[in-house]
Image (tube, rainbow, N blue to C red; front, side):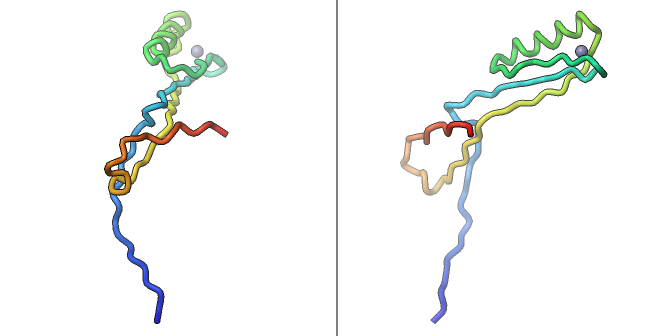
Amino acid sequence: MSARSVIRAVRHTIGTHPQSEITLTAHCLSGGCGWTLAATADLKAADLAMMTHTGRTGHPAFARTYEDVALVRRLELNEGQAGIPPLPTPH
Ligand SMILES: [Zn+2]
């Protein structure tokens, strides 16, 4: 007799963890500038900081990095469970 396994598709969903927030960091792409924006969850303030930098220097381009904690849930296994797992602590 051989071992058998049942493999079936399990539906998943992904989104930002409800206890997480999206943070943004940025740095100016004009050569030699070195201006950086420290991580912030205030996205409007981040936009304003970049526009202010452009207004003062004329530097128009920035690299932006958005970061959040993604939460993947197995829909079928979590049906009937209202609880959200706790936000993991960063390593
Ligand atoms: Zn700059």
